[in-house]
Image 1: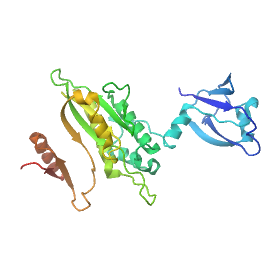
Image 2: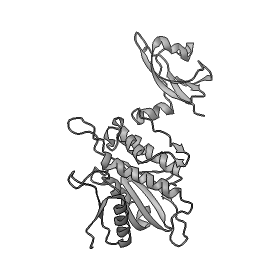
Image 3: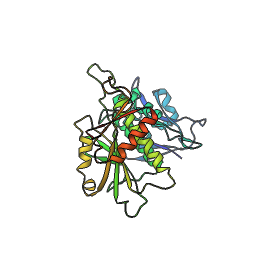
Length: 312
């Protein structure tokens, strides 16, 4: 059950003539059911329960009578739901869809959400960035990933931004202390100098989508991987890689035994729009088996895989 608690401020002469209030009401058939008031100092608190689908309405002073005769003047209902709406720039994070075979989402649905114009290019420290972060967090939680290190939740703040980290413990007692880091950055450029939104589909909504899809499939396995996995969505990559730099400087990361790192960036687009249908693998020299497997899978899918800096 979801409810909302609002604050109704006393008039102080501000409600003269044309005053408007942002009022959070429930979208339901009931008119005024479940209202209770209590006074604390200069404020009156209103509870509206239940409130299954809150909506934001702009009401004139004459409409404030809905809230009660003693509070018809200047009013503003402030509640957790309204707070979230302001934080995310009026973008709601859709719940995880569950289908017959499990989660009913795919890479395309992830990219579609992250690239929508309302997110304004996911520039760090903006409402669009927060919405993207909340989207990733909700998926991590739904997949059963755990918070990692000393963090109580999935967010690892570092001043300029916030990384999102989810942990999947390994199943092998001897290897579970080793961690495979799977990462992608979720931020982008925001808007260009002309004010146009840079959606960042390839850079890097597609990488985040691949990260989420990988997390879902690995958490759905009957037998978990032998090594532990750490899924990290980095912030501030476009700001001189601040997100990954801050993460690598954490004490938890410094003391961790990282066996491998798989980072995904700029997927689904031809390099510089001149190298078609090609996946580049960097720093694969140390992982010859992984390199061979990637080339084999690429051939099966009709994608050319080119190792960078690797000996043939």
